[in-house]
Image 1 (cartoon, rainbow, N blue to C red):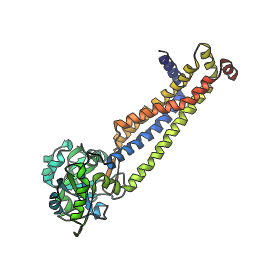
Image 2 (cartoon, rainbow, N blue to C red):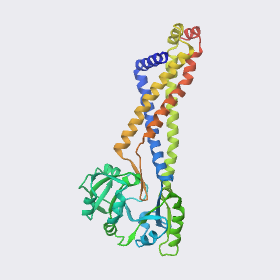
Image 3 (spheres, rainbow, N blue to C red):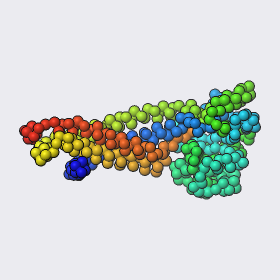
Image 4 (tube, one colour):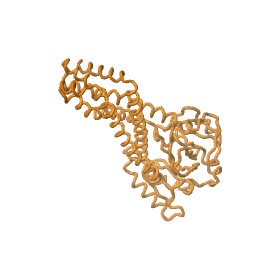
Length: 383
C-alpha cells in the first residue's frame, strides 16, 4: 500500500507540472518512435536473412547475375532439377521490377505457371478475389497486401509498372514469406511476352527440398548439373540469396541501429534532466516529507516512480505511434527484385515498453540519490 501511495503522489507531481511533463513525454515518445521503427527494420531484416531449421527453399539464379533483368535461364531446366534426389517441387519464375536499385516504391511482378497456383495457394490467404478470377484473366494479378495498400488497389483495378499493365484479380496475404506480401503474381507466358523476354526463358527457379538438412547438398548438385551448360547457375538458400543480393540495403539497416542507440541515450538524458530539475525545485517539499516521517528510501522511490510514469507514458505513445504509422504507410524497401516490409510485431511492443521501464529507472537513480541524501536541516538551508 505504501508503494501505491508513493506512486499516486508521483502521479500528482507529474500532473501538477503539466507543461514540463508534456514536453518530456513528447520527447520520450519521439525517441521511442524512432527506436520502434528501427527495431522493426532490424526484425524484418532478421526474418529475411537468418536461416532456420524450418527453411526448405532454394533459389536457382543465373551465375554472376544479380538484377532480375540480367538473369535468364531456360525454362526446361525445371525437368532436370526435378530429377534430383531430395527435391519436392520446382517453380520456374519470371521476375520484372520497376526499379532494380534500392527504392521505397518497388513493384515486383512474378510470373508463374497456371498449374503451379495450387502449390502457391497452400501458403496464402485471400483477403479479396479468388484463384478462379485470376485464372480467367490472362492479365490477372494476385497482389500482396502490402503492395495493394501502398498503391491503394482493389479488385478490378488496373495498374502498370515497368511497362507491364495488369488487372487486380485477388489480394493475398502470405502465411509463409513476407516477400509474397509485396509482389504481384501474374501468368508466366503473359509476363514473358509483356516484358519482351520471350517464351521459354525465366529469371529463376524456386526449389523446395524435403528437409533443411539437404539444402546444401541439393544446391551443389544443381550447380554441378549446369556447370557446363550455356547458362550456368548459382543456387543458394532463399535467405542467403536475399542477404547476398541486397548488401547495400542490409548495410543501411545495420547502420540504423546506431541511430536507435542514440535515441535511447537521448531519452535517458531527457528524463534524468527533467527529474533533476524537479528535485532541485522541491528541496523544501522533500524536507517537509522527511519531517512527516518519509524515509530516504521512500523519497528515492518517489523520484524513481515519477521517472517511470514519464518514461512509460512516453514509451507507450511512441511505440503506438510507430505501429500506426508503419501500418498506414506500408513502408517497403526493395533492392534487385527483393522487398523488405516494415511491419511491427508483438516483440517490438514488448521490447519498447520494457526498455521504457528500464530507462525510467536508470534516469531516476541519480536524481533519487540527490533527493534522499541530504538531512532535513540541509534541505531547509538549501531552499
